[in-house]
Image (tube, rainbow over all chains, first blue to last red; front, side):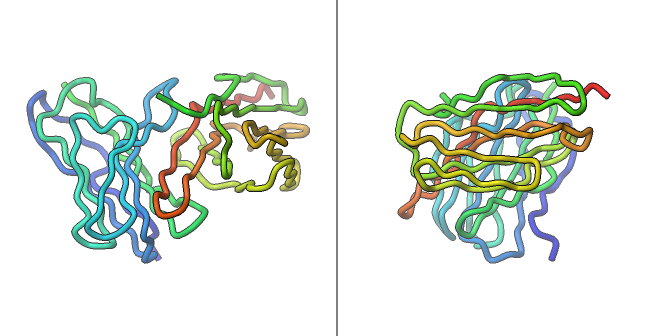
Length: 110
Length: 112
């Protein structure tokens, strides 16, 4: 099993460009999460999903959109990237207790 | 903002010394989880506590959940270089919501 896979691993965007981060899990987990990690800020929840076709806002949802059309995939979209969105993004999935994380995507917006 | 506060933000200890990180909430928690993130890595689940006053041990790591279920601690005895990393506490709401939010983390560095 691959677990939780994030693509891409690195990306540099210009301000105003759009992109989609893909998270895929092969563990049949219901719950999926997107976080951003910035120095001194810990892991902040952007959006999450409790099942296929459902999404909910987290602590810092502005500037991001998500979709969960298939149970195994959770997409995070940036419609118009801003330098403030430079961060490391982590996806996680969970069945009941433990959350499993992907390897992260390092995004730089210039 | 963060509902769960974690202190200290950084901790530098000599190898062999003990280390403790604390997690505090203004509201009662249904559970508390702990994760470890090695430098350059991703968070990895360590444990979950659910009962008031609960204490669990994993080798040199001791986890506690406060009697009022508003605070928790992670204590490492006799630190080793392999303990380096950032330790996060996290709370998970239940009953269909399943929202998982993290504290700000404590970054532990070991002086050999």
